Length: 588
Ligand SMILES: Nc1nc2c(ncn2[C@@H]2O[C@H](COP(=O)(O)OP(=O)(O)OP(=O)(O)O)[C@@H](O)[C@H]2O)c(=O)[nH]1
Ligand SMILES: [Mg+2]
Image (cartoon, rainbow, N blue to C red; front, side, top):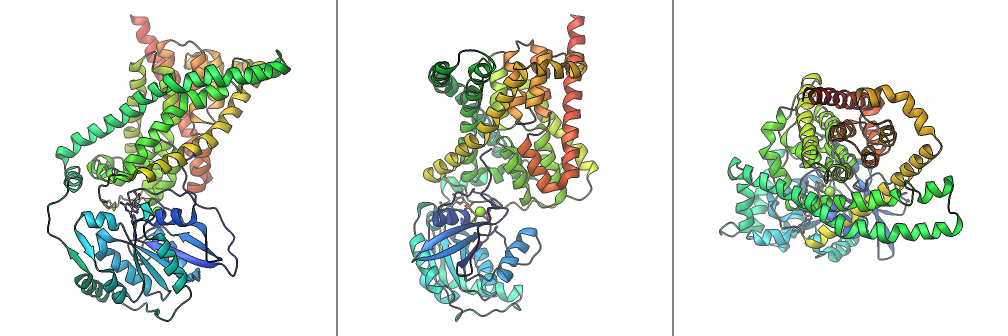
């Protein structure tokens, strides 16, 4: 699904290309600067650890090509964490021509400490003093000229999200490129000496006005205390749910379904009918299950409205800085599952798509945490597309079943997390998530982010879904479905109590999570069957792309264990619900 960071695209760096490192503390706006300078779309969000692996992009300026590298943010260069090691490796080995070090103007002291550490590596460095707009609102003013003098390097004030100062930043970068006069490598400075220097500079350049905290600052602090933080959290999550579920339903009924069913599908059907009017090919293309019928209706009319609204809500929550605050509130609860509160971020991302959620766990403090969160997301967190499918299947029929599926999902996260916490060795580190400023997200940045994600969904989901539907049409038309259904009948019709055609969902569910649900739409199921089918689909095997990331991050063995466990759990719990449900049905 379209939510990955643009990492790992290896651009070829030629000898004459300039190498520019983009560095800084976490959450200071590096990725925004990167996107603006290179025109490449990378994810940015208002919490630490958005960028977990470096990204390269190209800048062309004054007829010279530069390769800009977005390095993950770190608080220091002590090589105590994997991200820091990456950063140090770049400084040592990338033979960079220049470093752009981004500073958060609202947090100058800590950022200057990092700035000095970068300078100790002796590379020409230019500083972007970012988030000047927020600093101004907080009554912080910084004397840029004095700061330049103290650092002996250019400092450019910027508001990256609004492009302010970025042209000047480029000019300055090109000016000092390769100019090593002012920079001397000195890796002997002690922590204490550095902090003393920072203190001196701060006294010289920063002035903080005494003033009342703004509404956002007060709200940001209140959100952290159990009261009123918890009621606010409930309110925020209910609103989010309302927008996605209610809004999605409205959008689907008013726009997406009519558009697809009254215009797009008939359009394709008319065209195809010019050439053929019956037979297998006709059925595979535009028959009841045709690629150009369900293959368009399912992803665009049923799923897209929910995915779109989910991304609107997620992007807003991300850029506002609310998620880390939620992390503080749920810290004690999540600790019982073996992970600290900061992991609420990948969990919530998982409700969109498990792929970026699992990659995002790289910001977690320990391997144990990464593994627990990734397993739980793969097992029991439905992605936005699957949520859309659940609503399509259950929304009209029974809100109670829909709610039950999500309750079962929650309960199994708690149970599985508790078990994993006991089984997997290792301890839980303290929560390192920093609380960012609460911001009113910039509307343009927000729109762009939503667009990137929705576009990604359309590209990455549409093709597999069409292939899935094509495959479904093929196996149904050729009688293969009946043959396979016969083999697994003891499981599907016996243990799970589903009609034998439900086999199709199990076959397609391997491709994408929502495809485990959507075929059930056509089967006329009883309420109990709906619940059983949905629960099986919920737990059943993470989709192909998720398996891919699991293998990449944890290796084949662990991914196999996760994959097999999810299938076993799906059939076990689904069957149990069927058996108990049927038994209770018999009693009454
Ligand atoms: N108001 C304001 N917000 C900004 C500015 N620059 C960046 N932001 C916001 O600050 C947040 C952090 O930006 P990112 O680019 O993700 O930060 P990063 O330094 O890449 O963070 P990591 O990848 O976690 O190290 C995002 O929500 C941005 O929209 C700015 O100049 N003004
Ligand atoms: Mg970043």
